[in-house]
Length: 421
Length: 213
Ligand code: HEM
Ligand code: SF4
Ligand code: SF4
Image 1 (cartoon, each protein chain N blue to C red):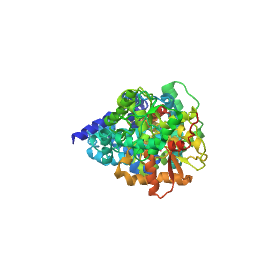
Image 2: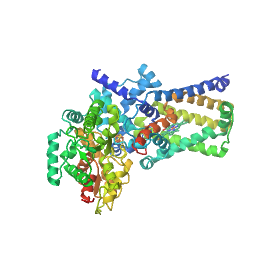
Image 3: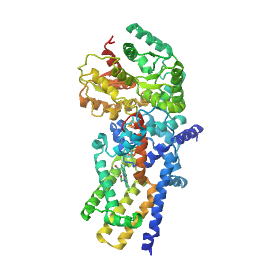
Image 4: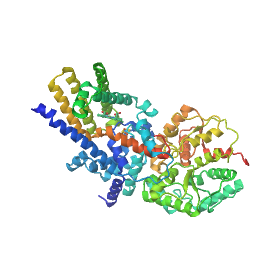
């Protein structure tokens, strides 16, 4: 048994708290969670049943914490957790779970299965059982500052572009600004329109804002791979930058897991509350609209629907702002049948999009979204996560569908009434 | 006599083992500990917990459409069992005499019969589903089957005892109920208590985030 495996088991043991103990004690093996998971519904493969994905964690708990388990282990009836369990389950916990949280909404005994999958990854990543794509993304995030290898130079080039196009100047490292904004690498590389949009909106609303040259990356690969130390390091960089600049708020961008990372997990990772507050860009835009600081004009009569990013809505609690905002610029906004906190995931969250070997399964799981769109018959899908956007576009292209994917922030910027003061 | 043993010492032993076992399990769960959440709450953890404890009795659309059989069978069995357990005349008398010291109105005989039929049908359907459906077959272990079979036997002997009003059937029923009580704390049957904790923990976490779970 290798030492690294031992450390992985120890890390896993460390995750077993009252929540996990109650969940494992309560599970009635009804399998209802399977029906909530897109990896099961689209493949009908029982191995993709959410609770089955945490089997190694259950085995550890059972053999160390329950009467029958301890007895069976001492009599040699069940073998303890082995390295081959890790090898076999790696695909299940990384490739077939986006940490979307949908299973946790339907379990009759109330188990937060997603929480357990997030936690079992801690043990697996320590033991070295994680997909190469995610390991490398985490390494790049720690060494370069971005999972995609985006550097300050790349950001500055993108910002220069935005400044040229808009005629606005973008404040960098401005001390005591109200808001410090973060971006996901994907926005910087693939969707600079997002940066342009918030520059315009903030200018119109007279928002005092800045970007830190020390910490502009919002994503957190440590959270996805399940490595507490890496996750804490990445959060710590943002916290240091924000507290050094003395900002009041840090703005989490149109990215799902970045919000979970900085808003909900962050303080627990670094072991203290922040000196600033975290606000999601959609919450901020909704607030600016309600306060009358931005005015939106001209309603779009294209039929539109909304794809809820799991980590912002179901796991993040930003449920109403995207709806309020979209309704204020769209005349024909219709919800998919399962929406809001019961939406279906795009298939690429939780690090799955950084895991190349998971691509065929992810495209299969996309059938769920395809079905939802076909059922609704709407060809414009608005969303608020750069990762969802890429994954949705890939899925649509793969299925030769002509649905357009639009960023909510960008859509709002198009309807911005300038000089409304 | 074996009858006196079942009616006397074994009853006291089993009910004691049940109470101590259940408390032990619950204490063990709480003692596994929970770190305080340092993020700023958007909503209330307390009301989120209370909400989830009750709201999970009403299933989401995903469950009502995709797991309808299990849902109906599950309610048939559990509601039936609950009624039989606390409102069958012999149980009311037994509990009043040995535990509470007071009684309450029991359901009429015909209600008992109908309820028992629902409970049996529900339990059998759930068990058939368990062995036939690929997902539940993969998840199930020995404990699941022992739990179901034990409950089934307790219910069966109970009905027979009532129908035949034969002392030896009554003793057999009591004996199986005692085995059930002793087995309970070591098994998945604990879900009857721990579901409150699971729903509460999840509801609290989601409630802080402002999500109704
Ligand atoms: C005296 C109390 C209880 C007993 C003896 C009991 C017993 C059982 C048994 C034997 C099963 C397994 C049926 C099977 O699948 O073969 C079961 C399943 C289940 N029980 Fe209970 N239970 C009790 C209370 C509760 C309570 C209070 C809840 C509330 C949440 C609950 C929720 C469930 C659920 C959700 C299932 C799964 C049904 C399925 O397979 O779809 N039970 N219970
Ligand atoms: S979190 Fe989402 S993807 Fe993961 S098991 Fe649950 S439903 Fe499936
Ligand atoms: S839905 Fe809940 S109780 Fe049922 S198998 Fe899944 S985790 Fe266990």
